[in-house]
Length: 530
Image (cartoon, rainbow, N blue to C red; front, side, top):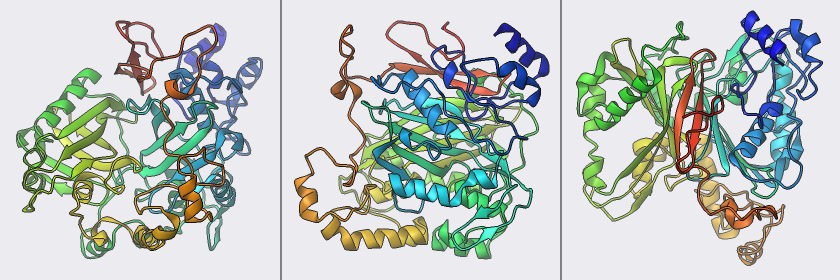
């Protein structure tokens, strides 16, 4: 093994396909590897590693890890990360259906949820791996959700070259050899605490639409854009936004970063981000923002510094929500853009004060998890802010909307749907509202609608859910459902770790989430020291 590592270091090959490098002994056998053909002879002698695949081996798909425990699954962080990497290595479980639970749901943007069979059928129909044989997810920032310890979240920046035919709904596009570079995409995986199978996959949610060369799109829409058959903007953006784009100025995509050296140490970068948050994203201290600062959301923007400060200063959320609780967690430096800091954000509060000229009604706001990013220059000024990008629309009561759109929706004063939702989503919600007396599925529910009658669903509401019925809501805490081994006591009903800290490897440009239990030192994937 030392000889193998030495050869890798000598050749300058550090990249591992689809996940960050890790030294966890329990995770080694789950790592999918991609490297030059010159190492095939040596690596073939390593018994515990899966099949190799490189850019010049187009016929090979990612091979799932071989060390997944088939039974007696224990929902520990290490086991969940192994499962997450198995799902990733099998092209989001499309190449290994055994990873999917019978109650599996796929949640994506601007479309209805898909059940297990529909999800597999759609993946087989489009087959991105056939069109992009060298498809690589470049997954990073793996972390366990602090509020739901059965959910693993991470980010992908998918790339690939179109070397095969791409099958779309109405056409088949010939290969053109173009390189696809998708924007950062938020992925969430929720697992069954008893079997370890995947019960919910949330994907396709862009974290920054101005990154990459796919017009801010992910998945099959990104592939169609590279193939020269992009989807209509009416399918992606709200009608009013599409009209504004038609008459407005064309927005260019950002250039790829040319430097992979951060201007400051990670701890300083994170403190700069926290300083902006304390200054209410710079609206209370505009001097923290550079002269060329811009704000960009999933729909709004880019907005320059003056307009941003003026518009966002008008939303006095603390007066409208005196008990406003804004949580910012998992601060991390972007391994593909070291000038940028990402953070997960989630807000909640009760509307008891005036908001944008409207009188309060005491409604409760529970926001979804959102991705926020701060980009800095060499002098420490913020040059760019992104916010409002929803990571998981099934969370909260905002109808899947982020930012101020979600706040207004949650408190019962929503903005017009034409300003906040794309046409497919508007039509889907109208259909769900019309069928609600029959299906008992609300417009904001992400359950699957089946052919079962309403009376049958009511009777089964508190009973165990069969595979053909509506899938359950996110699974309960592990301690309430999973029995501990006979030689151990049951784990208490609490999150797996009390606090976390981000570690960043400047060599591999990869960030890790470390955990701390009780008074122990932080436990990181690459180090056991604090």
